[in-house]
Figure 1: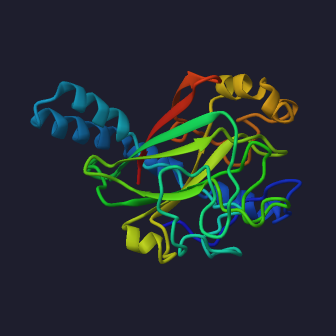
Figure 2: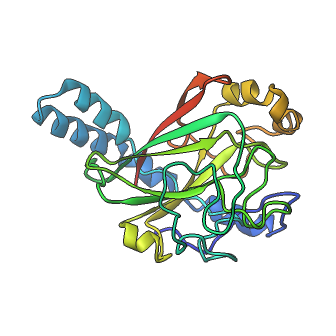
Length: 270
């Protein structure tokens, strides 16, 4: 189980100690996960075939390539483990995470980005119906609500959703900006139930998703994200402290354009 109280170093924002964070990052035992991938894929495919759907068999085989890597939460989780706790606030359970809620009234603007996530049991490949997922990210200017100067009194771009019977849930957000030292990304935590999530219990897993390079370039070439383009060009997936050891299970398939917005789809096995 992920240590809920570890936090990544976000350069030029907070200095949390790179050496300690890197030690945490590389203790992920990826070899064990990869060793079990073939067996999990075969089991998922057979189960889907038994249900009479060749397409479902293919999807199960693809989804069950192994558990999503556990990552550190970063210094801005607002889950009670490092400063403020948004999870216990009324209004946190929502699909549109662009506006703030409660006593806050700010709205995050930018290129629309919809996350469509499917949560599966990594052992059985079955949908984790009823699991709750908390997602958070920075705004187009690279600021995290509840922490960053100018956004400390906001709680936008944070939200919780519950997986349906197929393990599916969705959030409407904006494309995050780039800030020094990190590849464009979003954070998430998966909880067994909504009750556990809104009580700030220990999550089942904490991880991050990486956004594709070509989409980042397209978004950051727009005027609203002009400050992000040079920052993103100084960073890469291979140098990012979280994704440098692999991101195949953390990069969604993204479709759309800068005018109408994007949709990012990812299967998360936990």
